[in-house]
Structure formats: C-alpha cells, structure tokens
Image (cartoon, rainbow, N blue to C red):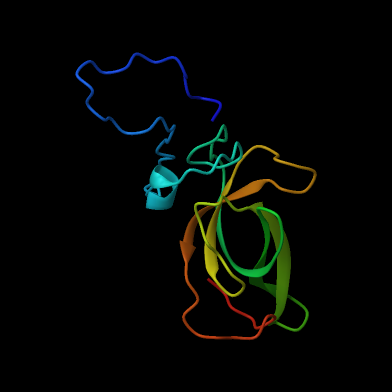
Length: 145
C-alpha cells in the first residue's frame, strides 16, 4: 500500500504485532468493513484503504452489472412529475461506481454510494456500504429507495 512506511521500527522482545496495513474511518456514520481491515488486497481507489475521500452526495441504488473489473453499474429509480397530466412517470438512471474488493457484491444487491473525486472517465462514486439481496426481482423492476 502507498501509505505504509516499510522501514518502521520493530518491537523489542520478539512480540508479534499486527501486520502493516493502512485503514481509515471514512466518517459519515459508516463502519469500515472487517474485510478491509483484515484483507490483504491493495486498491488505491478504495475509500477505506486507498487515497480517496468521500464527500458530497450519498446515494442508494440496485446493482445491475458487475461485468467490469472493480466497477459496478448501479440503477437508481425515481418518479418525475408531468404537470400537464398531473401524474408521475417512472424514470431511471445508471451510475457507474468503483467497488472495492472489501465488498463481495452480486447483481440485485442494494449498495450505498458516496461521491468522490473522478476515478476514471465516467466513475465518480465509490461503494461505501452493501446490503445483500433479500427478494429475487427482475433486472429492470422499479424500486424507489
């Protein structure tokens, strides 16, 4: 990891201390997952172990694609009011987000995203929390959070 000082002083007496691993608390009342603390992955774009700060908006959505490496596509459903007909219409938007190896996600899971600096051409969000899928639904079913 980039934030680790490799030449740290060793403890005298041969006491086995924990391995060198940089982990931080991102704040916002979100808990750092145990897989980020105890894991051995290196991900510079991970909000818990890398060089990314979470600031701005916090969003929730459902995963529709996990085909990219460490990147997922999240579907966000919302209602848009049409004034002429005085009714709502269903709309959705797809949002690519970076998913750290600390989370084992699959399609249909609900994730919480935190805004961060641009990580690539399209990715501006990072997964900060994960809820496993409870009820099996279709890929394009409408669900407002």
